[in-house]
Amino acid sequence: MSRSSRKIYNGAVCHILQRGNNKNIIFKDDDDYANFLKLIKRYKKRYFFNIYNYCLMPNHVHLLIQIISKTDMPKIFQGIFQSFQFHHRKKYDYCGSLYQNRYKSILVENNSYLLECARYIERNPVRAEIVKQFSEYQWSSYNFYAYGKKNSIITPNPLFFDLARTTNKRRKMYMEYVTQPRPYEELLDKNMGKLV
Image (cartoon, rainbow, N blue to C red; front, side, top):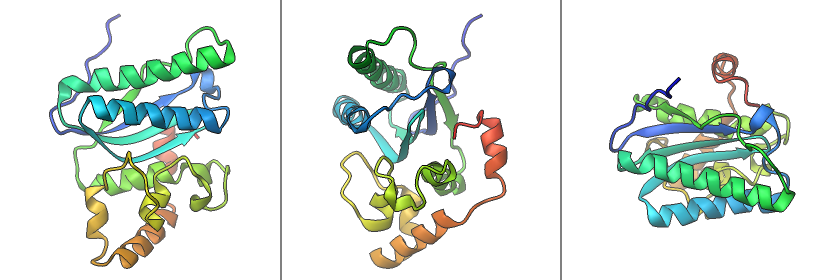
């Protein structure tokens, strides 16, 4: 059976998800997380794309990205995910597929969902009970938005600037926005296969 083609166009914004085979751990230590972020930096030098938000969880990855040229998308994510799989196999003497399937790509066609998707992504570590506070988790974009922590792979989410006029107020609004749970989160988890 052939794979269905991905719905994509120049300038498209997508929520990218990739999880470990059988939901297994793919990031076993800080070096693994750091290696994955280095791969993103490397591919950002090769291809032009924006990462608005991300969260690297122990057994899966969330990226909210904008692809400038639709022809680059397969090269970017095949490159990042295959390179990380090579790292994992070499480091852990691992055989077989690291990932459950090819990555999921959910098109974000409505601008109003852009910040909601970011919020959903960054809530993962608290919802999975890995940390109690969002700021405690270093492998997401949350601290970039909430505290202005430098992060060279991030292009600010365009809707972040609409939250308030001043930087301090914007950060405060963002923290409040991410903190509030939404009733639809359980439905999203069910639809996406309960990643957390």
